[in-house]
Length: 299
Image 1: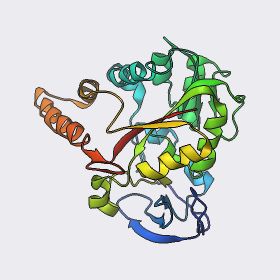
Image 2: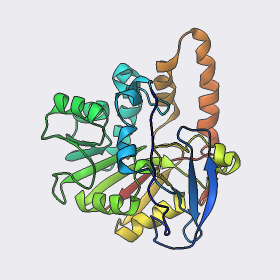
Image 3: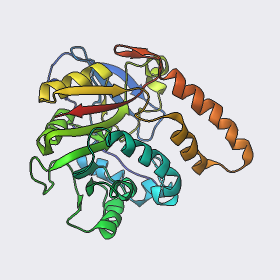
């Protein structure tokens, strides 16, 4: 299915720190559509510039996104929930070391698989911009539970959530500081915000440059460990902890990977996954050998 994309005017300031000291970094040509990214010289934030129009952005996440019928696709989690639960449950185990119960909001909840796992411990809510997956989640949990929309037009009140999760979501947001600020307002005192995204200061991203696989048409925002941590602190979060590569161990990742296995020979992939996992634990300050990170921000 052929898609047509349009872009807005070029940005003159950094979406994260508002500095005007920005410069062209890469042309991303391995995707459809191709696009360009700029970097801020002040905070090192990388962002799509010019950004897609909001209409083109929403068009990315139609049915074809989940069924593989468009150039920019993802998998349909409904087909592999059994395998994904290994990772979801492992993450919930870590979250519950800090917050045992309460209201949980999953931003970018897709079809609601993670919310289903979380509902054993939390009263769950979701936000999903895709009408295709969001409507399914509404049928699953109810229209009052799932908001089909964004962090900027939701019906939820301030100080409502003990936990907010944004798993591989923040990079999809064009105005990240405003989104993180909204999460801060939605969090209860002593609440927890969980973010999974890429660390562009990692050696993986630095070596692969414009060919790095995280440069995708739906990704507007690319962080480093340092600028994301500093932004969260500036917004008001009292403590930030970063897990590298993720906030759980290797076994759940291995078990989830079986969703793609076709034969016993596929188990050889476990060596690659394990190698990446343990190499990712080698880091110092803002530098790391790989670019995977999960951030826990405490209000």
